[in-house]
Length: 103
View (tube, rainbow, N blue to C red):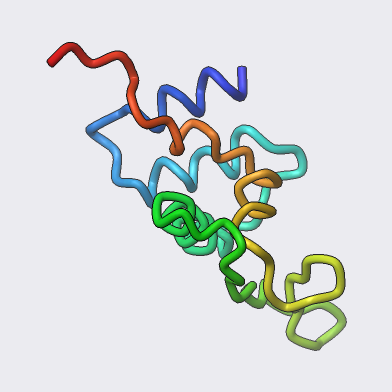
């Protein structure tokens, strides 16, 4: 269901990119990827389309744990390369250049 739903979300013109990614992160992952990652995923998609797969994207804080701000990390770092975010969040549906539109 995940890949097909992601394709449906990516091609749904009635949804904003933010809303589509939000649904994808919460519906197609278990446990769900935190909603604070929506903007990070969009930045990773933008980096992909700019052919900048290694772009380091800052990772956000996700509320508090044990009374302290919780920093999302990738391999102990507070940034992650765009390719890693794309891979982890399964953003492939937003990276397809052509969905078979007849022009």
